[in-house]
Length: 185
Image (tube, rainbow, N blue to C red; front, top):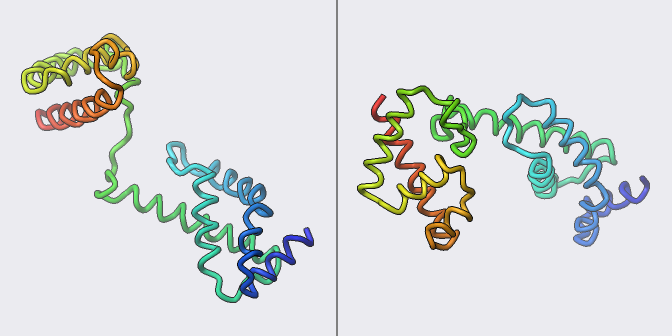
């Protein structure tokens, strides 16, 4: 890859055109490197390879004042940047601010007939009743989504509201139900 070496040298010398040409030359290789890094992580990693490449490139483009000593040095620096990003993400997940040791459960994926106990279903029904008293539209939306299995856009059509309005009510209802159900434990 003589073009890459020349472009790296020119970018290191401060040529803005060379810096702009650098990403297209290294993107595929950085993407493969990032995919390998992400694949080696534990399941449930929320950082995707594409985002990892972009974040690493931003760090590389702004953080190497003297340039790189060739292709190998550049890719070593890219690997190090990706490692640091993944470590920062992992440390962030453990912090209370980022949810601590919570585990993500998609509300939409729950099957009320098989995934919850009868006590949990009764608690959900009680909470849903309270939600419907306070916010009838949100209560109806939850019933259509959770119990009827309708997608958000279909539920919006049934309720004769816009998808954006449905999304807002759905976000509110999920947060309200979560708070209500976790406070009664």
